[in-house]
Length: 331
Ligand SMILES: NC(=O)c1ccc[n+]([C@@H]2O[C@H](COP(=O)([O-])OP(=O)(O)OC[C@H]3O[C@@H](n4cnc5c(N)ncnc54)[C@H](OP(=O)(O)O)[C@@H]3O)[C@@H](O)[C@H]2O)c1
Image (tube, rainbow, N blue to C red; front, side):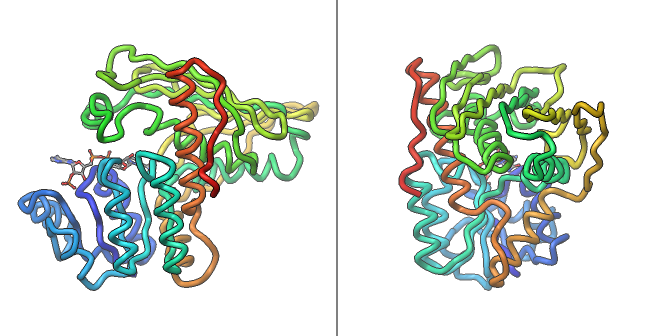
């Protein structure tokens, strides 16, 4: 599969170019808003073509695009790619509004194109192993989930994320959206209502840099989440508590295949082993298969709409102080 990169981004250079190549794909071209940057990025990453015109990229010999521009650009770029008949793997959050995200996903479905959302965590061996534990009944009926995703935003990412709401900055679109996808992945149901409080506690200028929220699942399971850009000394975690056991995982809300999982039951504590493959390469492999008619992307378009819908509800609840229903825009 031949890929065009829409966005000369950090995530593409740090993870996705390597993942595309590891999964047997070819990176054919890259788009930047600046011609100089398109050319220098292309040269640095051994990409044959660097352009600053989207139509030129879409006219090229490519099968799929990977969109990793800032968030406000995703919608128009995805719609143009779909109109040009390209499969789309889009970064989260898919768009600035749930309605736009749903429109992108419907357009791809109507055109018979594969659409994926780059939610990496559900590709982690750690999360796959935890989901197996939950779904095989090892912890009985699930009572609650706790998500610990307060991190320190690396210096080189402290740009639009911390000061530009128009570009989709803020910790809710950046991290809560991933947690929404991960919780849905584990529980197989969609949050119904949320309450939340947010703050800007040092980094955020005009956007929130920290949020805590509680989500009500239709089954009655309660979910507690904490996302932040400002915590230097904590580590991430994901816990699922059930009537017969608890899963306590440390350092698993990360881009790397690391962490520890402990299962606690009446029998005592057990370390749970898991695969340590590259998260993004697995996602790319599943996307290639799906575009070739086999299976589905790891996280598809509907998953991307739903994770954004939860994040949008968290943002609305945090601003209003009200318990807020999640609006999935009919997907
Ligand atoms: N799924 C994940 O694990 C994950 C992880 C990180 C980010 N993301 C998502 O990916 C998207 C991009 O995030 P990112 O962290 O990669 O953002 P980023 O590096 O800031 O890139 C975003 C845009 O900023 C411009 N840019 C980047 N570096 C630049 C530089 N040195 N000089 C001038 N312009 C520069 C580029 O514009 P041009 O293209 O116009 O040159 C690029 O498209 C966002 O939607 C984010 O939410 C997802």
